[in-house]
Structures are given as C-alpha cells and as structure tokens.
Amino acid sequence: MRTDPADLLDWPSLAAGGFPFPEAVPASRLAAELSAMLVSPDPEIRDDHACTAAARWIREGRLDGVLVTLGDTAASRFVHPEIQARTFAPLIIGSVLTRAHAVPGLVPREAAERWYAAFSAWYPAERDTRGWDDSLGWLHAVAHGADAIAAFAKALPDRRTELLELCARRMTAPQADYRYAQLEDARLARALTRVLQAPGLTRKQATGWLTTVEKALAGGGPGPVPVWAFNTFATLQSLHLHLTRGLADEGVPPHAEAVAARAAGLLRLPCHWLA
Image (cartoon, rainbow, N blue to C red):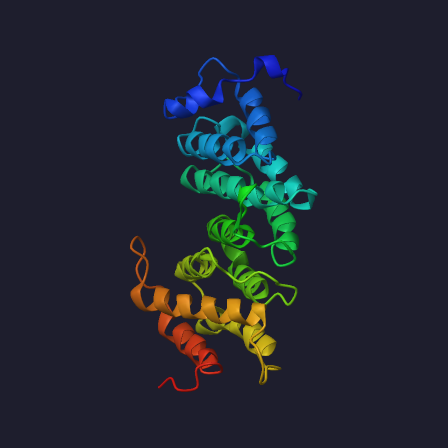
C-alpha cells in the first residue's frame, strides 16, 4: 500500500511526545508506513522513529491486528539489497514474537515458521556484520539476530537445538572481516543463555552445539588469530560469564556448569595457562 507523502504522520512530533499512539490512524496504514521507514538509510527515520515506535506500540498491543503483516514484511527483507533493511528485520520479528508469546493466539505457528525459515537462512550467512556505520548508524546484524534467536526460542521451543546451532554457525562464520566491537559477543551470549533457560533440554542437547565450534577451531595453528576465531573466543568468554553469573531476570540455566566447562575447554586453546 502506497502512502501519499503529504499524508505521512508527523514523526518528529510523535517522537518528541514519547510516541503517543495515533488513535485515528488505521493500523494497516501504520504498519505500511512503519515498514517503509524501516528500510531508510537515515538512522533517525529508521531507528529513532520507526523502530522505536513499532517496538513500543507492538509491546502495548496497539498493533495486534497487523502483527502477521509486520512479521511477513520484515521476513521478506532478509534478502533485501540494503544492509540496514536486512538488519532491522530481526528486531521487528523479535518484537512481534515477544508480543505473541505474551498473548497466545495472536500469531499462528505457521507464520512463526515462515519467519524462522527466512531468518535461519540469513543469519549465519550475512557478510556485513558491522555494528555501527558513521552514515547509516546502528546496523548490528549479529546483535539484532541474537535478540531474534531468544524470541524464536519461546515461539518455537522445539527448535531450540537448531537455534543454538545457528549461534555457533554465526560466531564461526569464516567469511567474517569485522571484529566484534559493539558488544556483539555479549548479545550472542545472552541469547544463548536464554535459549538454554528453557526447560526440557538434555545435557547433550545443551552442550552439543559446541561441537560445531570445536570443529571450526580444530584447524588452528601458529600465526595471527583470524577474525572469526577472535569473535568466537570473545563470545565464549562472554558466555562463560553469563553462565556463571546468570541473567538478572532468569537466573542460571539448567546445565550451565556443563556448558561453561565445555566453553572453558575451548578457551584453553588460545589461553593455555588457564587452570
């Protein structure tokens, strides 16, 4: 649905007022306008206005009638040619899934499965993983994807082991040329910890994804640490801390000790002096 630019909402005024919900505007129009703005290369339009408003209104239940539309549009962006469009898609999907988890029945499982299929194809393969760009602002493919991982874990609990594997494939992606510089390792560690929080995982399932990491690191030797290996070690260190301290709202997950021990074993590869 195209919207005449003359009819667009006054987003700077909405932002200045803390994003009061525009009651007179149909939800379908809001969804179309927000989705269009989420592709913008202007970080004020995309992040400060569209993403902030969408997250708030989704959380408040203002957009319950268009959640599937928002999710489908976001999922279609994983193959968009522009990086900011791809990396803001998981934020919207995460918000939609979080709202759907709070109010069961809002989003059918088949919709969540559609979004998961698109997301899982994109996340480990994305080549542009910069956290910040001086022109585009926040991009954060790794961190935004990690947040979506945590939301998918609640929406599709039977895919938890696949989600752990996706995190492993993301951190060990060999095509990486960006060193985590904006706490991407912490966001991945938080997502992994949230997935591990869910009841029902066996010890083998909770630790099995680390075999992928172990295999990726097995061929290492003397010389400079590749970017992907640096990112992997940073994530393992952060994960060890998260598993030791736990999350403020959820505590320590089951099998935390076993997962932390496997992570520590891998960290002895670069840090052989560890006890």
